[in-house]
Length: 117
Image (spheres, one colour):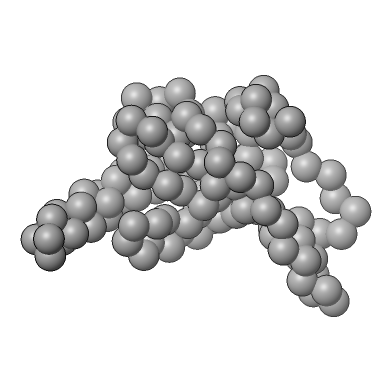
């Protein structure tokens, strides 16, 4: 069991590094804690990034599980939207975060994920 976890952890690290290497412009910051990974992107890159993550054969993050929001009162970036994406094919989850200022609109992901409706 332990060996299996180490193997998956290594594959996971390679996976996230490949995303960062292929898409450096879109990813502001990333964090990996097996079995989850988190990436932070800018609101202007959210739609193109999710389109690539869904359609590219390397990533296949084809399912939007959930959207959550965290409200940080009295901070410059008041809201943190988290999109939880899953690759059913690769059995991988990605938490994609976007920080927003108050009264800043954000593009909907309905064109990429119907579950965003």
